[in-house]
Every structure is written in structure tokens, then in C-alpha cells.
Figure 1: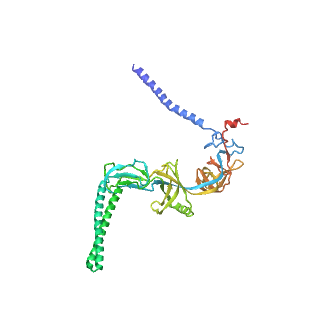
Figure 2: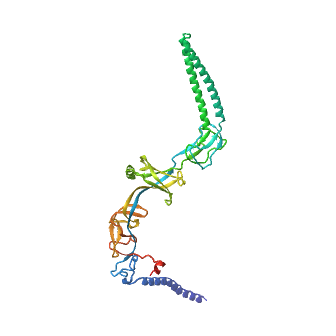
Figure 3: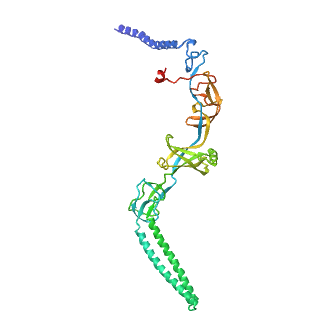
Length: 411
């Protein structure tokens, strides 16, 4: 039995060794096969880097030069506006916090929150009865003092006649004259008190000081209002016309002031926050009198008619100011203009299917187009897409537009 166990133990060792050897040989053999497949003759290796358009060199042209597929556009002539853009805030030309000028209980409210009101329209009314009573009291005092004044004047005239007859003394005449002046002062004082009460009665009816939109009311009927109330009764904001306050860098100020001295009235257009929707078109109004040294900008104001309410006070907007217009210039797509070692240039398409580098001088940009002040003529074809691999004299291919069903049916 012991011999049989020893036999089995000796037979397991070679099998284990063979198993371990096979675990190393199989991966090594697989790697050797993969390496042999990847190793190819130099003349069969694919070219390094991306394949040029039209296939490997020599496949598309007899000379072996690569051909790039590009998109082109033709230059035209037109007008290009010179604009300045900025951020702005819609600002009301008049914002009035309506306050009571007298103290009293609020008895009536004549407006709806958010409605439009005209200048002078009644907003609220305050209880007038205390001021009516005071007015009657002061009017009675005025009548009393006016009667005393009339009597003093009669006495003064009598004393004047008596002094001519030497029937009274000069002192009596002078005293009568002083009494008249005294009562005249009292009557003027009484008249002032009467006028004050009449004015208070006017103040009992609070009217809108400007034309605009009323906000949310600050008090309700039955509240006791005083002139010292900080919030007032309601706030009225003028919205038509309305203004937009914006800033421009100080380096643009010289050109703008020159245009203003020439009598120009630049147009100003405002857009929404995303610069996607045109909100209103207005006119430039004023320039601030100093530059903000902390930002190097100057404030400007433009006026807008706002009958449709498109502009709302304190709204954030994008502003575009039309400074000038370059007229009858060569116009090309912005994507055609490139910058590099030659400077600012474009690729011009030649009649033989090649391109040439053409240096240009550019002007204003607007609507995806740019003014070309020199270097191009009307009707030149320039590359707008696919110019990354081009160079002087490179051959190009312009893909033809896909034909429509109508084109295919046409003989």
C-alpha cells in the first residue's frame, strides 16, 4: 500500500510542472503571432497622420498633390454699420413717491394697482373736515379784524380833518395812523391763515405728479397718514418715454463726441438679456460730464418711446449704438478672414482651381460680414470653410450643391 501511494505522488509532479509550463507558453505564443501580423514591409505600411482629402497622395491628381475640399463665397459691395455694444439698465425719467402733505385719515383710494395715470389724476383723499373747520375759524377772525381795520381807517380820516381845523393834536393823528397799520398787519396775518387752510383742503386730494404707472399701494383706507411717512402712499413711475443708461470705454468717447459735434444723432437699439430679441429703437440723448476712474468708462443715456411697454424700469438690456456706417465697401464673410504670419489675409480662389494668399485690410463687422478696405475686389471668391490645410498654390475642390428633383428633371 505504501508503494502505491508513493507511485501516485511521483506521477503528479511531472503533470503539475507541465501545467505550469503551458500557462506561460500559451500567452507568449499569442503575443508572438500578434507581433508578426503587425510587422509589415515598409512599402505596405499606411502613411502616418490623417488621410488627406481625396485619398493618398497621387490618387486624385497626376502630380500627386493633395486636394482639399473647401466652401467658398463671393465678395459683394454694400454698407457696413460701425456699432458699439454695451450693457445697460432701463431707467425711468421720473419716479415719484407720492406722500401726503398733511396729516389725516385716508378716506378714499381712486386708483388700481398697476394702472396708468395721467398727471393730475386723483389718487387718494384724506378726511377734509378738520381743515374745513379751521378754515371757517380763520375766516371769522379775518372778518373781525377787517372790521376793526375799517373803523381805524375812519378814525384816522376824522383826525386828519380835525388837525386841519386845529381841533386836535398831532399826537392823536399819529396814534390813529399807527392803529391803522397795526390792523392792516393783523388782517394780512389772518388772510395767510385762511389761505393755508384752503391749501390744506387742496392737499386733502392727493393727485399724481407725473404721467406713469402706479405701483402697489403702501396704505389702505382708514390709515392715518402723515408727511413723515417714508414709504408714502404709492410710487408712480414714468414709462413712456423711458431711458436706458449704459457705459462705454473712454477710448470710444473721442469718436462719439466727434460725431455729436458734427450734428449726428446716433440711433440706439436695445436687445434682451440673451441678445436675441430686439426690444426697441431710440436715439442718443446725453453724455455724462466725467469718466468713472474706477472703471475707465463714461455713462450715456438714450431715450425710447415705450408705448407698448417693452422696456421696464430697472430691466437689464444689451445696447447697440450705431456710431457710423462704412458705405459702398467690399463685403466678405467674417469666416473668410484669417490671421497668421502674413498678417490678416484670405485665401482667394484662382481660375485654375488653386488658392492664393491675399493680405487684406479689414473694417467694421456686422451681421456675420466684414468690410474689406483693401486687398479684394467685388466678385472675388474667397474660402470660408476648410482653409486649415491650405497654403499658397494649394489645389482645392469645391463640392457641388446636391441637385434637387426639379434640377434632375430639367433637360
